[in-house]
Amino acid sequence: MNLYQALLMDHYQNPRNYGSLENPDFNSGEHNPSCGDIIAIQGLIENNQLKTIRFTAQGCVISVASASLLSEYVQGTPLEKISAITPEDMQKIIGITLGPLRLKCALLSLSALQKGIQTYKKDRNA
Image 1 (cartoon, rainbow, N blue to C red):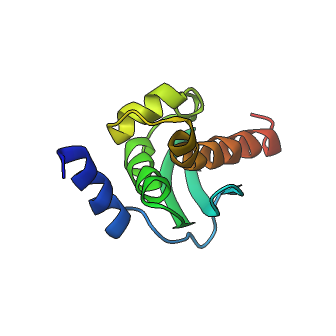
Image 2: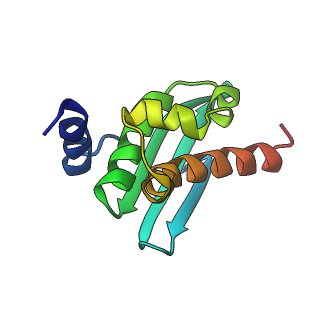
């Protein structure tokens, strides 16, 4: 097992920021019907930054580990920077290059997070 595989397995078995928030500023989710992965993301926002993030997930190693790695990466980050994260950035965050099907698993959490931030901004006309 290489370093990145070990890192992904660690985040899958011991996901960081896993759970839910009592009164989140946003609550968003994504589902990948082709494999059954489900990701739900919640966040607290303060001064236009993601102060706290939590997620729950049911899915493969890539989807759960990606959500965990992303949650660590974005905590305390300005919303504009999070909204600008690309699929290429996501592959850098998880440390490996993925084929199209596995990339879809990795992008599930990013999609849910960006959708949640977009809804938060829309609701507040920000």
